[in-house]
Length: 72
Image (cartoon, rainbow, N blue to C red; front, side, top):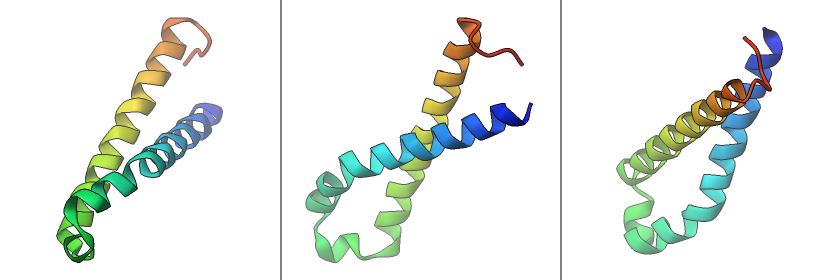
């Protein structure tokens, strides 16, 4: 059971990192540096990043369970 949690945390961190790597320049350019430095803008960005990370993690774990690679 502990291996599933380790896999889930690793997937979440990996997906969130990839989301941050691929979208940070776009959102910073879109909002501008002055607006980007305000907490509100970055809060919404990180909220979206966390939602994408959680959703991607659940999706990948569901696919692994559906294909019987994982059993829990």
